[in-house]
Image (tube, rainbow, N blue to C red; front, top):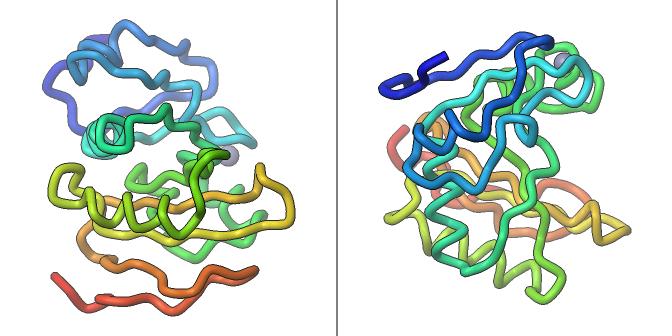
Length: 165
Ligand SMILES: [Zn+2]
C-alpha cells in the first residue's frame, strides 16, 4: 500500500502495520499505525493531519508522545463512554499520556500554545487516580475548538468553544 498523498488511512483488523509507509507519509514519523488502532477490534481510521500534529507537538515539547487512545470504532467508543461523534471515531483525535516530569496544567498549556505549529484545535486534559490515566485529548477537527479550563475527575468547561464554529 502506498500512502503517499493519502489524507485518510484505513486499515482492517488483519492488515499489517507499516512503520515504513507511515514514515514516508510524514518524512520521519515516530509513530506506528499500531499505536492508533482501535483497542477492541484492531481496525484503524487515521487522518494524516493528526499524525503530523503529534509529530510537531513532539518537536514542540521535546518529549516522546505516548498514545493511550487513538482510533475508536463506534462500538468501542460507546463502550468506554466516549461522546457521540467523537473525533476518535473519525481519526481526528487522540489521547496522549502526560509525561511524568511535567505538571498537567503545563502540559495542557504547552499543547494549547503549540496550536499554530501543530494545527491542534482542541485540548482537554484529565487527571485520573493513577498516572497512566493522566492524559490529554487532542483534536484537529475544526468543528470542535477549545481548551478545557478545569482539571478534575470530569471534563471541565471548554474555553473558546465557538472559535471557528
Ligand atoms: Zn473497535
